[in-house]
Image 1 (tube, rainbow over the protein chains, first blue to last red):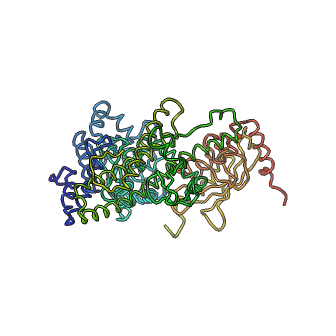
Image 2: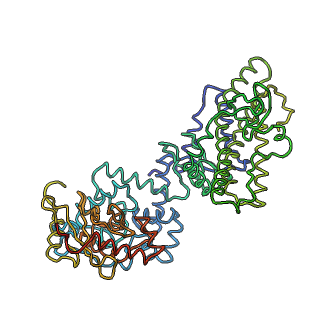
Image 3: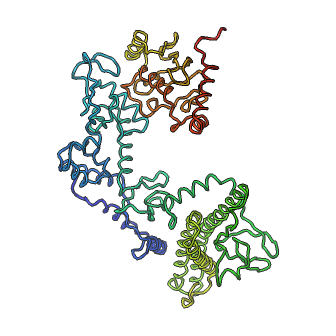
Length: 461
Length: 156
């Protein structure tokens, strides 16, 4: 390990600097997008770094070496100790000072007291294969259990093929001592098996390290490092996956990690029941013409009769925009406790579908608005070429579209939260705020889709 | 590890015959030394008392690095044994250790018959019954033992 370049953050920075595109405007927009995603004054700002496998190796090895020097153990044992103590060198050193024997037993480096029975070979027979063996051909680790190399080799092979690496245990009866890396590698000779062992070990180590997370993107090798383990947004700049640092699921504020997991499982389970809503068309409530929604905005205007209505509840839009936005609030039957079980089940399904429909609808709107982004860029280009406004004049529209995307994303994730929220004043307040956001988002969406002017004096919303 | 039978399996088989476990008979198949026909007597003071249960036991290629595969052939009413005779026992899965033997496995199965564990069920309906009404569950287990596991072989 070389000392140069000890700051693992350097690599990702270097890469960013290399990104000098020749397409000036493309780069300009890209830059803008990054800014929107993670600004320090943004309440959702979260500090993190993207690491490559080599960076992570270096980081872990630095810890291993530091501990190995501090308490004078082999690097392999230091690895076992760190893996079972969330990679905190200081914690292990403190525990070692307090009671080193307890630390080693708790970390399964030494056998626990009850496991003193030694299956030492009578007449130098390996007790696993029952083959007679030379005394020095039998080997093992701290627990004193000794077996022949062939048996160890077979044991490791079977376990590694099952995906076990950091949890490899001794073959002795009731012995839970962990096999340190140097012992395993001294036995396993097959290069493919060695690679597998080290790969699984690496995965286990990243998972046990509180500051590290694998990017959940398909086949993405990136590891994210953040100083604090919080349910915050992380965006991988390799595969563009956006996820929650704490749980690895798609980013889900304001819903909590546990709740979103429940919600997503529920949605997967109930997908059949919810299927009917995936139909994309609805009829205009006034003239009954069939309408396909092709934009993100839920404020609809019938192309035929020009009636303004809400896509969600099919109510008149006039009652939506101005005063109190009611469409996001589920109205529970107040008398439900006295109804039959059948009616209660139906009510429960109705309630779920209400929230699911809104959740699903915002997801769809988000996709449609993503396409609209391309159209906006084309439109701006057209306008500028046409000399109506400058690039700078039109910049506001891109900013609004970006903001719209963020807001709608959050809005989508308010529905699982509201679904699981207990009835009461907290829920009422939450739904009031949700409704306000919903109204503003639809308003913004309507305006972004139809923006024709560069007049920056008019406030949107 | 193709070729001859590993010394370990030969040794274990010899010992099973020379010093059999009380209440358990394990005989290797004539054509396959890795396949055992096993008879386990229902333990005293258990609902299975008086019955004899047939099991099959197979030592896979990786044995003793992998656990033997064991299955009840006789129908049995037990929360940790399902309709197909599969057994929920930790040492047959993740708690397997190469230091364990055929003997220890069969002893553990015998112990499982004495102490059913409805909190870690394999047969959910049976486990449920065991929790809701233990007396009735034990009664059913006794009936099944009489019906499906008579100690005297049925005249054929």
